[in-house]
Image (cartoon, rainbow, N blue to C red; front, side, top):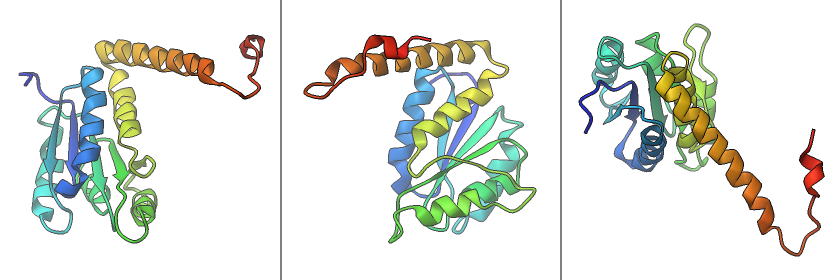
Amino acid sequence: MSSEKPLAGIVLGSKSDMEQAEKISAILDELYIVHEVTVASAHRTPEDVAAYSTSARTRGIKVIIAVAGLSAALPGTIAAHTILPVIGVPAVSGSLGGMDALLAIAQMPPGVPVATVGINGGRNAALLAARIIAIYDEKVFTALSEWTVKASEKTRLDRAHIKGLPSAPPEAFEI
């Protein structure tokens, strides 16, 4: 565990969201972003959500990623208690498969913005958090730039795996 202060906070609405936390954490680790993970519920422990959100900035947190399913009130509740960027991750849950969570997070009232990624989009939430932090942190900017190059190279290499189908020629990708 690093002795550096965390720059990102990951808040889960319940322990059932742990898989998303692991995906988010893996990306943040790759990009050398110190972070912390906790569980706090907008409905069951609203005072904990308020305290965490209010204290985050003074503790060095620069962005908060909130994972929640069903009514997904967590990201909005966090955003109501801080002006830090909040990224909502709607989690697959319930009979609507996460659509209810996606809509709840995306349809915030004016004045309480929450960035929203796709359902179970923890990886994109981590990358968005990294882009926010990279605005002022050169180490993160460099790591994110290198990560992006590697992702591009992997996609280009994937073209070699097209078998039995007509493939686009290499010159199709020249400008």
